[in-house]
Length: 142
Image 1 (cartoon, rainbow, N blue to C red):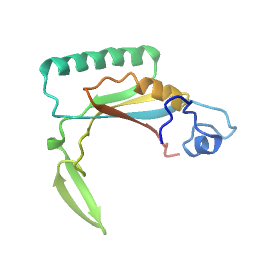
Image 2: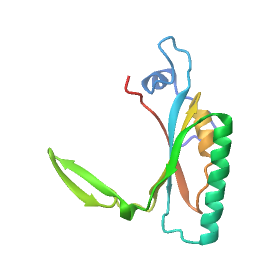
Image 3: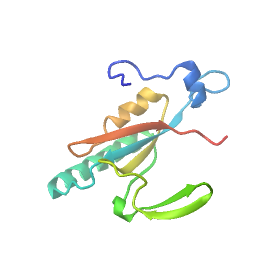
């Protein structure tokens, strides 16, 4: 379900499940993974150069705002290897786990006070003519 106009702030119950609040109920900075999905078959050199330049500008903006924790682009899916475990038995497969129209092409790891702020950064991420950004809160191992 999408909510294009409303605030994306999580309910108190959901916020505590993703650790958006501390034990006193106060908000604190969280980390969000901004996963970039797009069509890796885009091969127009000028479009790719423009997208890369836009990512460089966004990286500088994230750095200046002090919210960037990390990020990188990924090599194409034909370089991937999937380790699949079924009933305790493991096997290796070339490529990604599933065939999809959009491939995971990169990510940014950012710190933000809430989901709205993370979505604000996600909306600035450049891509090709068709792409998606998945915003996922990090679940600390604490």
